[in-house]
Image 1: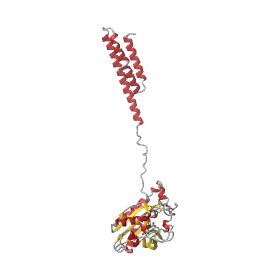
Image 2 (image 1 turned 60 degrees about the horizontal axis):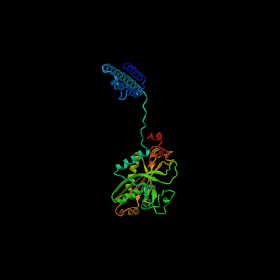
Image 3 (image 1 turned 135 degrees about the horizontal axis):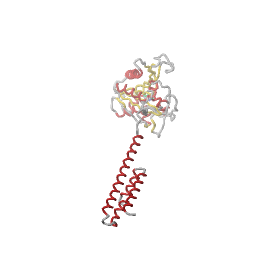
Image 4 (image 1 turned 30 degrees about the vertical axis):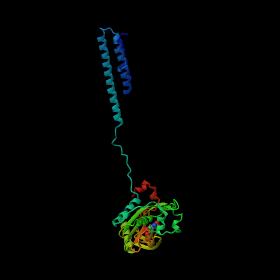
Length: 341
Ligand code: DAH
């Protein structure tokens, strides 16, 4: 086979392989196989030394023609492949703007959160500070400094989660009172919201973990009239200006005298309904004048200072305000429930 025929064969083979290439990668393999350093055309050029000198310009021209031809054919094919690829991509990535959008569900504020913010708004408006205390608490703060003696039924293991003999999950937010008084910065006007724990079975009105808001005011000349006025105003703000309050004598170890406060039923306005179990009144909190013994145990001079305290159940407020009749709904966090508030 002479040089001419050999070159013609190379051209044809290259043509075939280019046409049969299935993608850019294969096309590149063809380029290497023919035009690369160890490619077929390069091999021909290397064989030029065996060609008679007078024929060299002619053969040289032919090799060059073949190279240009293959190169152009490669380029053309490559351009066509790229275009097909791009068209395919454009088709695949098309956005159908008529499709319905994916609806993103936004979060909702929990009824507890709404109720807490409402209570905080009211007390902050009256000049109270919001403070927090630990959920894991010393037995001494949860009980002893609040005048709850060693043999008090509240200390029974039935109610209290003990971590060690001296450390408990706080059963009430009242220990924050002791912590704030001990700091010795008087006067005090604070509320302390937070989680509390009791070893209770779950039912419509009980949970082993719930929330309270503690209140404490300590100053000179604080009387039961201040307590009454404050909590009456609180009830009116929370349940509406028509709301009446009733202070029933009660007993708490850390207050003397103590009371429980009922508000007139905001549903039936006091005439009696399912909500207030026919009585016209709903109990909302416990309160009293801070026991002098508690003041002294917490480093406050009970001769100079007096004060009042109260404790509100947050869930109770949320249940009442939003007319929810089962406390368990507050903990299940079912979005269908939460979205109503
Ligand atoms: N700590 C009480 C409880 O958990 C509620 C309470 C009653 C708090 C009277 C007070 C108070 O500060 O004065 O039942």
